[in-house]
Every structure is written in C-alpha cells, then in structure tokens.
Length: 350
Ligand code: DAH
Image (cartoon, rainbow, N blue to C red):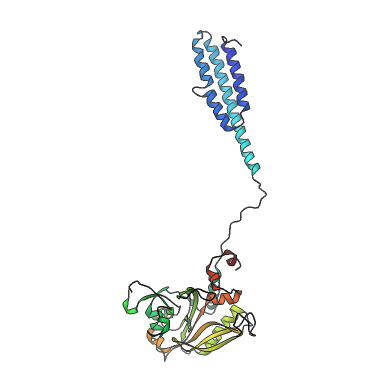
C-alpha cells in the first residue's frame, strides 16, 4: 500500500474500520467506535484533513469515494446497533424464569370484629331496628348522669374512666371523657325523637383496664333500645333469645340472671350454655356450664325523666353486648389481645 495513493489508503482504512465495527460486542463498544471513526476528531475527519495536500484534479474523486465510505460505515453502525440491542433484550428475557410463580398481591379483608359488628347489626336490622352511632368523646352527663349513675358511683372513679384534660365546651353537661359504654347514645337518641324508638348502636368504648387475656382498654359494644307503649320483659327475653340463637345456632340455650344496672330496673345478665362443654362445665366457662354474654333490663323511669319521656306512658327495654366477648366464644379465641395485634396469621382465618 502506497502512502502516496489516497484511494488505496482510503480502501485500507475502510477495510479496517468495517472489521472493527463487525467485531464490536456491546453497545458501549459500538458507541466508542462511532466516536473514534465518525466523530469530529475521528479517523475519517483525520483522513479528510490529509486531503488538503492533494492536487485539485484528484480531490473530487477521492472526496466522492470518502462520502461513499462514510455512508457505508454509518449504515453498518446502525445495523450493528439494532442487532446488539435485540440480542440484549433477548438475553434479559432468557435470564428471567417466566415459569416461576408470581408474587400474588395480598387481598385485604374485614377485621373479625368489624365483621361480627356487621352481622349483629344486620340481624337487628332484619327485625326492624335502625343503626345509629354516637361520639367516642362524651360528656359526663351522657355517660353517667342521664343514665341514673350518681356522682359517687364507683364506675365514675378516675380509675375506671378515661377523663380528658380539655375544658368542657358545655360545662353544664360536665367534663369530657372517653365513653366507657355505648349506653350514652340511648340518651342522645331519645333527646331528639319521640317514641316509638327502636335502635341499635355499634361502637368503640374505653376503660383504663390493664390488658390481659380478657381485658383491653378499648373494645366494642352494641347497645340496643326499644321504647314504646306496652314494652315488657317478655319482649326483652324474646328479642335476645332470637338474637343469640341466630348468632350461636338454633340449639343455643339461654338464661336470664337477675343483676343490677343503674339505668335499668329490673336488670339481668344473660348467659348462654357454654359452647365448648354444652353446659357440663369446662375451663372456658370456669366449670359453670354458662358464660355471660350481655347485660339488659327495662329502662329505669329516671332515665326517661332525663329525656322528657313520661314513664307512665311508655316503657322500654335496653341491652348492651360486648363484641369481642362474643367473637371469642364463637371462634374459640382465648385472648382478647389477639384481635388488636394485627397478626395476619390470625386475621386471615376469618
Ligand atoms: N352499659 C353496660 C356495660 O357497659 C351494658 C348494659 C347493661 C347496657 C344493661 C344496657 C343495659 O343497655 O340495659 O356494662
């Protein structure tokens, strides 16, 4: 190859660069080659500079040939680039094993307590009850006073109630607290409407109990209230017996035990025959054969007086049941804290 013959030099350069491009093994390498060959200071640019010394007659011929070489190398570069990127994509697919099982998205569901609340409310709705709710931050008046719970009653003790430091927005209704039961909603409902009343009230309640297997500082209740002319203890027994059979099965035996609540007279606690031993006695029922599930009674005349109802005109029944208690009995869960630990292994079983 003669240094003096530019066409021969160009042919040699073309062959060399074509070989380099064909041998490129990666897109990065190809990009470096592009700069080294076609860049402003690349080999073709250098070659062009060297043409300055050529006689005028030779220049167009070499120039034309140079353009053809440039076009050919550019085409080769483009071709090689698309080949390499196709190969890269195929290699990536080759590395992923598409037969492996995918990551299934975890499906959410309702918390067991939410579900049981819904089930209890639905049972009452089908019996013609209306679902109402009340505030969790409550006045002393509604939580105690209007429910015939006097100031010196032990449940009003600071050890049994969460009192708030905030000043009361309505001092006549006493201080603020986290309601310790759903019963105050009875008063809120009766204050605003005339009998007949037929409501159930689901909601959260709060008590400063040390947490253990059967106590939590927060739990759920469903309150019930029926007020009309001629409501009797028979309605109370019939209603709750139907409900408990619906929740625990038609064979469920119930018993009403005399008890005391300030806002009902007479009052009772209701037991169901222990679901585990069916009444013969076991550790769940403390060998008694029965487990308590709710409190109830006939609305106390003083409660009616607080809301302006005439106790000679109307009578009423009321009840309050603890949802966690019910859920534990129904599902054989022996520790209330399990509901609030958010352990998906437990929650997924419902
Ligand atoms: N409020 C009571 C409690 O939290 C439960 C209760 C008992 C509600 C008797 C009632 C009732 O409506 O009549 O322990």
